[in-house]
Length: 276
Image (cartoon, rainbow, N blue to C red; front, side):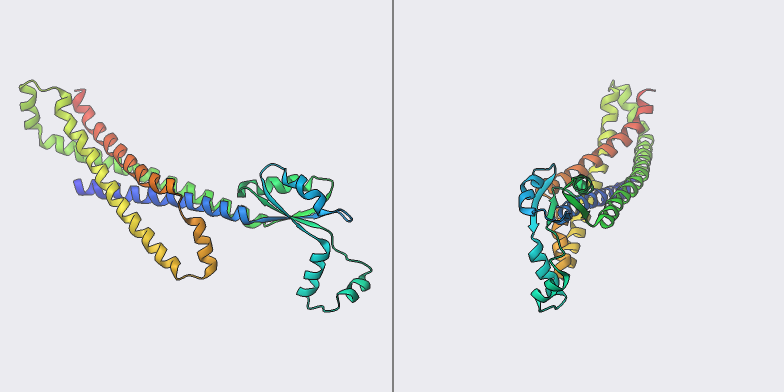
């Protein structure tokens, strides 16, 4: 029963740690993508992007603004189309058909739709475009992973509490003779049942320790896998790295959660004997 309790707590804390780490990593990846994602703002004809750059840069949650001159954009477009006669193409259309545009970067991915809507409402802006569907799918994916993870953790928490509760109760029952002797010599209920509570905490701590080792091994394996991936995936892996605070907070959280599970399960097991 001890090993059953330890294994159950280990599985619970391993999945809890993976879920928590994945949530942090996806949020970090979204933040990285949000800081790199540019909102294309196309101005109305005959408006200068240089004159509006500072004004747009002062908007809330805007990290940076970059101006794309209409002449530079026209040259790049003709270059992409393999057109060599720049002046001839311009004369054929009468003038440069493009307008000045601005590339706006958001401070976070969650603020991208808000900034795009704010920019669209400005009278100087003709239209705004950005990868709305991609960002919304990533945000929904993160939300779905989080909800599924918490649901699984909730079920495993109940299972771990039940196993630890049963384990401690069986230990109390098998040691009823020693408990009766301690009661006859005047031992208090706290002195009698505290070791059983501490044993439940020890089960939780041992399970959390094993879970931390498994998570470290899984993290090492993922790093080895990403080391042989293309450059694009390596750049994405940078957003999946935990911050120094998160690296410390993750094992501390697992140890605290494991101790809480062990303490709660064992206390529920001995409470009926204490109040009796």
